[in-house]
Length: 85
Image (tube, rainbow, N blue to C red; front, side, top):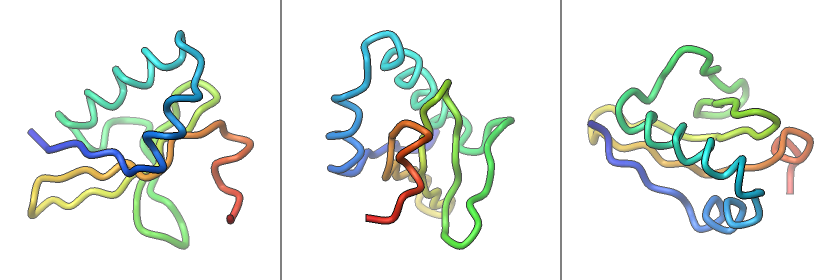
């Protein structure tokens, strides 16, 4: 079992998600703690980490297998998540 942590930015972004989608994202995050690379996960190009699709939202995260730790650093709508800020 991996330890799941959300960055402060991911926590802020998660608060803005509509309630129906929030429950689906919460379920997906809970499954990440069990298996950090579930089917449908895509390795990001140009940066470390993985992308998990939940409806029109994307969860971007990094896995540290040695420490058994998953850090979620973005949870945003597909249209906004890849924009550089």
